[in-house]
Image (cartoon, rainbow, N blue to C red):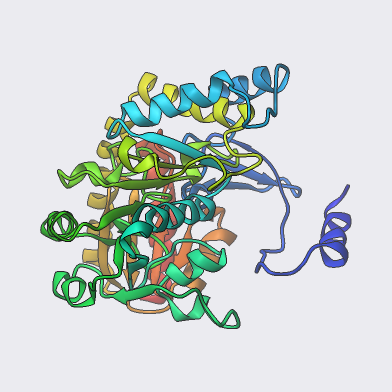
Length: 394
């Protein structure tokens, strides 16, 4: 099909619930994407941090090809080798918990909400506190957990039992807790909210509040997990352990997969029949995700994320000294937010026209989330384009 035929199919047969750019992506390799016109793009956004090893990483591709030729789906009334292997990788690199598998971050967070409620149901507790400017998904429960009113429009009545407080504010947490509170749910780094990083004392304080009040600490690492911050999981920067953690996006490097991990004690509350996912933990997704862990280890990508993150922050802050349009630079590792003093959407659009893919979030924040195996060469190429565009709006 040519470009016009592909666009016509979308116009006629696909619900227009996304704002799409008028070009068709045809293929990807490493840090680059190509459209059907042959134009090449440097992808420093990785599709919301999904393609964290780059597009079509050969090790992940091989794992998927071999698994696809062996076994793609098996119902969860049976065992399969890839699911157990992936669970071991997640558990062994985190807090030695047990995993539930699904297909997306929203589903993982939905599972976390259900687990927190069912685990606390005998105590009559069901309320969950979440943070303003958070984002947890698009299902009815997770969009309710998302404390941004713009995502609630048109979906009332929302799910009962959620309270919203300010991020990095322990006093508001304490004031919001009552005898029905079963969980506190947050992203250690808010992605859609503008790359807002949790303070270390705040996270330690949350852990203590949860311990003192018999409340579960639920960490949404859908975007900030899997090496994005230079550690496997962002919570590992804070010297605490969550009760429940959710993963997706880069877990499968493009394969649809989500996971929820919790302690063995809490996991026991999800008895057979209480929760399920038909495609969750399928052999194809799990083989791909296990290969992601293997690549992170074999290529030393946690260390690279730290080094390239530090390099990126240094270069962007140098740009900010020259250009008054930059208000703040924040993040950890390769999860970077560049807040402008002006709306960022037009800047991102003009970067795209120059062959650089970035993202605008929270109106004024440019979100940069390159591949974990990014090099200085490509960081420099991308920042050269960004700086060139910012000069024209300064």
